[in-house]
Amino acid sequence: MDDHYALIMGVCLVLGLFAGVAMYLSDFCIAGMFRDLFLLRRTVMLRYLALLVVSSMILFELARQMRLLTLYPFPLLYSPTPANLIGGFLFGTGMVLAGGCVVGTLYKMGSGSVLSATAFIGLIAGSGLYAEIHPFWASFAESTTFFRGKITIPQILGVDPLVPILAASVFGLYFIRLWSRDRKLVRLSYAKGYLQPWKAALLLSVIGLLSYAFIGMPLGVTSSYAKLSGYFGSIFFKEHIDGLAYFHALPLKYVQPFSGMRLEGGPGPVFDAISAIQFPLVAGIVLGSAASAAWLKEFNIHFGAPLRQYVSALSGGVIMGLASRMAPTCNIWHLCGGLPILAASSVLFLLGLFPGAWLGSLIFAGLVTKKGETIRMCLKEKEYVERN
Amino acid sequence: MNVIKFDIRSQICPATLLIALKEINSHSLQLEDGTVKLIFLTDNRDALTTIPESVANMGYSVNVTRKENFYSIEVCGGQQ
Image (cartoon, rainbow over all chains, first blue to last red; front, side):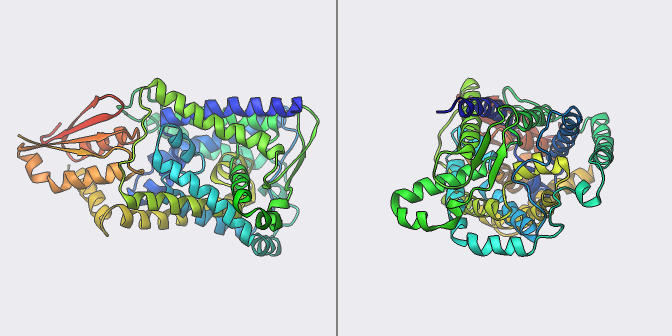
């Protein structure tokens, strides 16, 4: 193996390990942040997502000013299209049903969750399913693209990124300061070794920055799921997989910042730059979480959940895998990478996530509890708070 | 006192909280007159924040203890 690939793989594995530890200890569940807004009327966890986005925004811009980010915007970001919005919507529904997003599934699986392992299988299947509709969907995305050649809002406005980034950061920091002053960023937990989510948010933004500076792009994992679907599909339907255009695409073509090496990669079942970047990251998150769970003596493989929860996890995984290719890419890529540089496609993805998570919460409530029960449960708690 | 134990380990998020709230609501009268205590066994770290927080908001007392590789959340009646 090439030394450059070995270095990239080593860096991504270490970043993944740190991310896995931070996510497990703080239970940094992005799917839960959106779901709880609709299912439980709670916004507390969304504050940590806001902190993660704002801190990434500031760190990325500081690094850009210091000329540490040679690729700006980073590769695999495109001009906006309604496909971002539709993909975000489906992704939101899928992540709620799956009980975790594309990385939430990984850190929960690392701690022994069989349901998350089920969702992971769904993610791979959903990514493979996309290959079947790729020609139609790629054509739709291409024909509906607007602001062609412009990726970020500053590019669309024709201004230096510093001004809008500064404005958005100041706006975000104002709210973060209010939450900090009112102690709304601190959570009381009885979990052993609990890491406050605000600390995890800051740590994840630093990990995102290191990935951007060293690898040339922030954290992303879902192309590797498409690759896995290609690998598994090839075992049983090699001719069919070989004939699908999606598995021959090479969307990643860039010069890696530190090595100066020209790298290429795509969803096809071959070893390339995507494999070198994303497989170690995925492995790192799972291993970091598993090590944390083992250290806390919480690692536990348990099959006790009702069948309908497995159905929810699997179908959510399939929808999420499909959506991550349609959007294209996932919540981590858009929220922790694209949004901090004000990528227009990431803004559309976020706008789609909210109604998607709402729909997912509605379906989830029906699957897990009897119809209408969730709303009554939440009202009872709310009524008590108001009464007292 | 009647003790009712619920093993809700390895549930999908946030089923742990939803099931706990459902059982607390359906036993609210017995919890308030002190004739019942509910125990929830969970391995969901998020539930160790959300269940105690919700239980406290509803005016019941809560006690969390660590077991082998999971946690036990005890819910009793009475104001905290």
